[in-house]
Image (cartoon, rainbow, N blue to C red; front, side, top):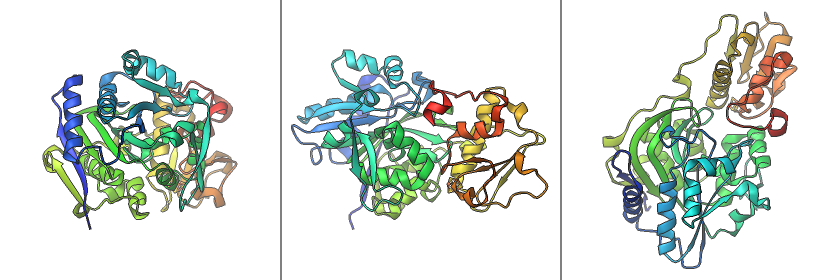
Amino acid sequence: MQKATVSIVKTPAGPDFEQIYAAVKQSLDLIGGIEDIVRPGHLVLINPSWVAPPVEREAGCITLPEVARAIADIVKAAGARPVIAESSAVGVDTEKVIQSSGYRDLLELGYEVVNLKATKATVDLPAENGIVFNQVECWELVKQADVIISVPKLKTHDQTEMTCAIKKLKGLLTDKAKKAMHQEGLFDGVIDLLSAVKPRLAVVDAVVCQEGVGPVFGKPVEMNLVLAGKDVVAVDAVCARLIGYDPEETLLTKNAAARGLGVMDAESINIIGEPLEGVTRRFLRAIEDDPVEVEGFELIHGEAACTGCRNTVMSALIDMRNADQLMYLPGVTVVTGKAPLPADASPDNIVTIGLCMKDNQTERHVKGCPPNNALVVKAIIGDRAEVKRMYAEESLDKTD
Ligand code: SF4
């Protein structure tokens, strides 16, 4: 069987556009260029990560505009029409991300930069052999595109361990579909999305990454790398190893490989450019990043609890700490992962989390798989205070 190829190329520290262009070009040349997938006249959707502000270049939160620009130039040189397009997380104003992140400069230079949320037109795309969804609601431009290129920022993630080429595709969904994915099952739903939109190429911005509680508030890590490959699962598998995971631990990669959408085994992937061992750095996991401990608050993870709910609860607690709301924790017990409800706690004070607890849920149950962080905070706080959303501007009711 032919191996997948993933390239790894170094950039100088603090690279400018010319240096990033050179690295992106080299990463694509190493995998055989793009002419086999991008033809003259094609509409090519370049999909960077614009999850949310903070958008400072050094924060490692969103894909550097220079990376998207370099890909657009290479696509244009192939005779195709590049369109840089994305929709930010639910409740986040994508226009603000564009305006404050350097993508506005690309607009001024004449590049097509599109806020998908503003396009309004939507389309249902069939998800072949979907497990959670038979179809996914995306923006019309996704259907119009001849080729989709995933251009993620490499980060640890508070629900999925890592976000990279596969997870990033959620930005092609409408907000309604993003919410449904969290309610019905993220770990298979995102793979349904992958099978529906079929990206042909991934180019990873690993110049400044994030570790810890990504994808927005993690700690920046300078890696000064660009990676590329035409098997997006293989790209994610290499990125997982790059930051110290076994791809078996990053469930989206594992599920995508299990469904035959790409390969993740080291022996099935040919890495060219920089040797992986020379650039690997173990990233702090979200769960290891300064955990919250409060006397009188109990957290019970059952045997079925996966990293989705473990990290979601941890992230919700960090949101509460940031919002100065830890005083609402004593007396509350949070239960996940099919754990039995504790006999010594009043059911009124037990918050059950996620699909795994649906057969044993209390009145303070939070739906989802994994649920939204803000809804977990809401279930803990109740009516005692308002949930402060960390980066979304719309109200909780409107967005979740
Ligand atoms: S509901 Fe269950 S399967 Fe879903 S994220 Fe939570 S623990 Fe994992």
